[in-house]
Image: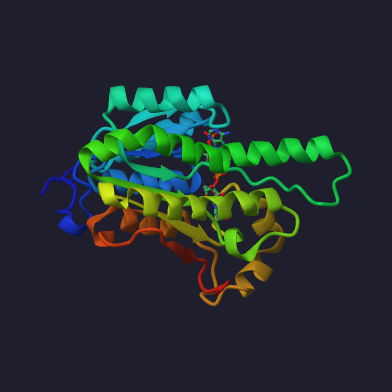
Length: 265
Ligand SMILES: NC(=O)c1ccc[n+]([C@@H]2O[C@H](COP(=O)([O-])OP(=O)(O)OC[C@H]3O[C@@H](n4cnc5c(N)ncnc54)[C@H](OP(=O)(O)O)[C@@H]3O)[C@@H](O)[C@H]2O)c1
């Protein structure tokens, strides 16, 4: 085997050359997911917002690992029109995305102690648009091709916050609870077309999003986790791969807690 030949893939993990759209794949959980899906024979649409250089690096790593060529797609996910353009460009460049990973997201504190209601509403609406509405909209745009193929896999990257709630970021927790509910609605409506939808619900993950909190109180956060460590982006990527792969043939409408045992319900 030459150094560039990828290791043989178990058929249970082989994504069959299908097109996987991973939103927010320039860094963090999305980047780890894009790299892993590429290694598992998906043609990855690497979506990014602002971090083009990071997204290019992810595409380079997929190429080095021997995965099918990936392609980059920029779009601001708060915008309806940019989501439509994103879907159009992915379909015309790589083919219809039958594997969707709704990962891009923002975490903005928005406490109920806020006295400026317009500022509260603005943060609320942006969070719902990026985290929840984009997932619903991109799924809607992808469903016709999935139904025609009698196959589709949708994974929401939700959060432990969907179930544990947040004291100072209700807009975030509500958006993530919405993603879990969206997966369940899709599961019930689309199962008859061979389309499944599921959610993963991570606790703390060591990424740029969590870094300020983790830097400030790592010992406290790790102390709440029976496994004794914060998740890596790769921990999340493996769970996402599970849902996209033949291993999860009967999983539909589920929400996988991925928090090291820190929040059990
Ligand atoms: N980290 C955690 O502790 C944790 C825990 C539970 C759930 N999650 C969820 O996991 C997902 C990934 O988070 P992460 O920790 O990997 O975060 P991250 O490192 O901050 O990455 C966020 C990604 O989303 C993209 N993005 C954000 N806003 C966007 C917008 N308006 N338009 C387009 N793209 C946008 C970013 O793209 P650019 O940089 O290219 O703009 C980036 O690729 C999120 O949905 C998050 O809520 C994270």
